[in-house]
Length: 498
Ligand code: BES
Ligand code: MN
Ligand code: ZN
Image 1: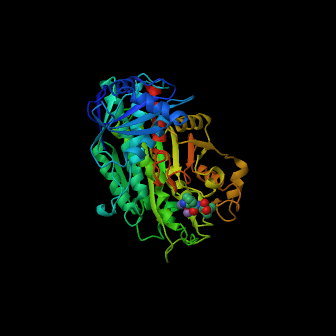
Image 2: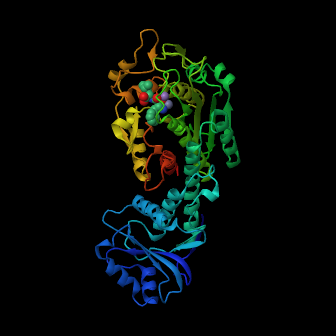
Image 3: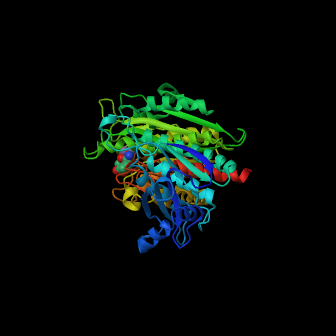
């Protein structure tokens, strides 16, 4: 779907979505339509009675006197309405438009309706919602078997100030491209997306001006990354460590660092997972996927900030050469780890990826994203990602960023008392805590052992990168969680500097 901008006036032909206030006020475009149609709009809305509320969509074919083929009246406005709810309204508008087979639809301006943001901002929020909700992954389906219509091929968005709307739209499209690319990566099966092919995909981002480096297994061995290599050794697919750099701030400042768990498939290894639902473990690279998409978004919108993104890419497989429960590995930091459970592999990946990131880049802060524990789903369901942090300011900033974009976080504890859970009899630490006790925190305190005095936050996104049901802004499957969050976080540092 192409999105174009137009001057705000009611079109004389074609198909148009007309926002209508819910509290009696029609808004300017709805008023014009009402006049052309001899009072039709007022009558339709009065007739709907209490069904006419925020989120209501009424479809009118060939409204007499207007010359239009089709009108959708879109109910907008309610108490405490915020920008995110307008995005979600865009998402539900998609349901009405998805039945169309190509062609163009005009989105009339909500000017004159009382909203929490100016009319052009509301338009942008609707477009964002439409774009997010309309994404789908159909590359492996025969088109003729696909009975779903693809929706309009063009959306003409009416705005009051074309110049500033064009700039805002371009920024929004940059981030949406990142989100949707992440969704595609997370959806790809593990026979297509594995460490090497994931790294190849990252190399393509060079065309956007990102610096991309790929470390292979030998480079990782030379650096002493025994923790990530221990996970990788059970797979026929070699691991990769990818470094993405965006120096939009001039490259002189210490950068912000994002680190992602990229387990392209997690069988559990020798501590193998049950068969039921194991196919979902292709999304165990969702943290790395989010870092990838965020870096893409920052590059596309030319963010004025220095950021480094590091992806730890492996596959966790059982094999004659796989690591065994009880094995002891030495991480790049020098810390030795007793691997009690080979299914607690994400923290082993992050141990080396985080140490490497701070050793090489001296970042001013680190945020890692990882589908780390099933326990975080027990604690928070799919409504929040778990947030763990050694720094109050960073935790607050992330929480705020999450609220802005609807990718919400809930803070969970760290601390010395929990660090006892990962003491090992024969090594410095072990990779699991106590059975059925604070499982997500055990993972977080493990990772914290590899953070050397830098503000750091760990986001356990196990419950949020994938959805088994349709959501307001995404269909079943990959959500793209984390991209907008990291973009908003980076933006908070940009705003500070300029
Ligand atoms: N990738 C899983 C966590 C996960 C589970 C993500 C379900 C999404 C949905 C992770 O590698 C894992 O297996 N964690 C174990 C840790 C345990 C062995 C300490 C878990 O949560 O069971
Ligand atoms: Mn696992
Ligand atoms: Zn995993």
